Length: 388
Image 1 (cartoon, rainbow, N blue to C red):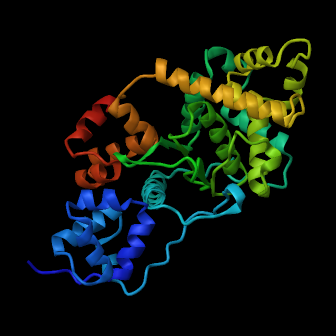
Image 2 (cartoon, rainbow, N blue to C red):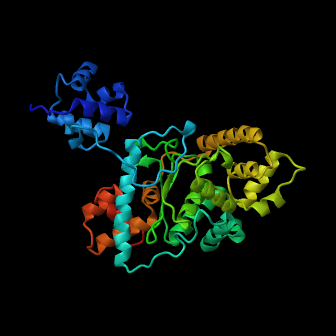
Image 3 (cartoon, one colour):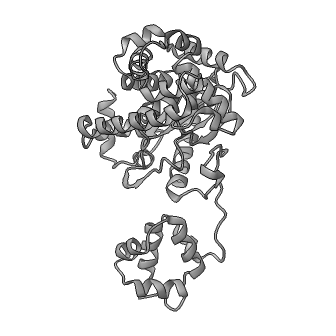
C-alpha cells in the first residue's frame, strides 16, 4: 500500500482546529494511539486511504494535509461577536463549513432571482445604525405587519415566531434555521460560537438562526437579525439574551438589540402595562401572553427599562430558562419531520426555487440534491410536498 507523505505540522494544526479529542480520533480512525503519535511525529506515514479518512474526520480538504504551512482561514462576514472576557477564538470547522454552504446557496439564489427579473427590496439598508431605533422598529413592524391584530391571531410565542419567519420569507427574506451542519447530526452547532447571522443583500437578504439555541430566545435573534437587514449591516452575532443590553459593547449590535426589543415589546406600551402592585412573576406571565413573546424576552425588556434590577434579572432568567428546558423535555416531540426540518434548514423559498429549476431543466438533479443535502430520488417527494 502506497503511503501518503503528509506534513506532520499540518496534521497537528488540523487536529487542534477540529477540536476532536485524541481518543475519539484514534477510535474513528480505527488505529492505536501509538500509530497516531508516529504520524504526528513524522516517523510514520498513513496510507492514502487512511489520509483521505483523516481529512474527512478532521473536516478539511484532503490537499490541506500536504501543504507546507496551514492556510489562513477568514470569516467571509463581519464578525460582530462579543465573547466572554473579549477572548476571540478562531472559527470552528463546523461554523466555517456552515457559512460557506449558506453563502454558496445564496449566490445561486441571487442569480435565480436576477433571471426572474426580480427587483431589489426597498427595505434593505433603508436605515443605518445612526437612525432612531424606535423608527427602525416601527418600519419593520409596518412592512411585516407585526401589529396587535396579528398577535391576537396567534396563541403562543412559538406560533408567533413561526409566523414571523413565514411573513419574512413572503417579503423576500431567506430565513434558515438549523442546529447542525447540513444533515450531519454529529456536527452540532455551538450556541456559544454564534446565535445567528444576517447577510444584507438587496436582492436576497438572508437570516440564519442557530437552532441549537433555546427556542424561547430564538425569537429575539430573529428580530435582531431583521434589524441588521434594515440597516444594511451584514454580520455574525452571538447576542446573549441572558445579559442586559448595557453589557453589549459593539455599536451595531447594541443598536440592533434596541430595535429588536422595541419590535417585540414596545417601550411605551410596556411601561403602561407593567403593574407595580402585582408580583414580577405575574407581570411576566401577563406580558408574555399579551405580546406573544417568551417570558425571557419580557425579562430582558424589564431590566433594560428599569422595572427590575440586574440581580433579580439574573435569578429570574435562569429560573425561566430551566422551566423552558423542562417543558422541552416533557412536552417536546422526539425525532421530527425530515421534510419540515429540510425546509427550515434551507428555507422554503430556496428549496422551491431549486425544485422549480430542476423541473425546468435549468439545473441538474444531482446539483440540486447536493445543494439541499438530499438524495436525488428525494427531490420528487420534495416537489410533491411543495405542491408542484
